[in-house]
Image 1: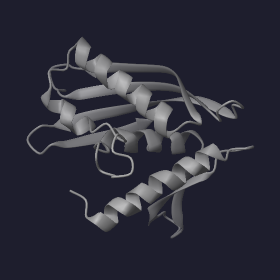
Image 2: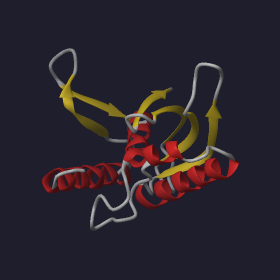
Image 3: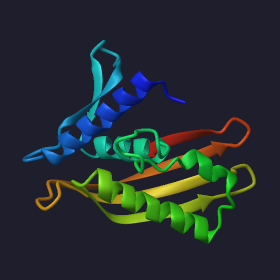
Length: 164
């Protein structure tokens, strides 16, 4: 569970990131991380990478984390204990669509594919394919990315990887 000041900081982070996306007149602003790159500069991403990271953050954020936005977040780590059938996959898909529509209103998901990935060695893995338009009514960019999530039920961890 997050401490109160961490919760406020993350809430401010989401609010500031959403404002950056809303204010996209000609280009999408940068998203800054709390880490340094190889050149000892603040690490940042822009454009489609920013959107992918914001959606990933919404996926991992649990509802009721922020008192002023109690419905924000999906809590994807909780789904690894559910039977991953067509009904659950559709529930996850609808939840992602609603969250992005509500909290990232300058991002429009044109296509969202949610698929369970299984074989003899891979379990608890979900693939999400996104085709998005950035910029609201005046689209400035569009693109595709994939998000792979793999759950570890023994620790409740979910590993993630964004692919462009």
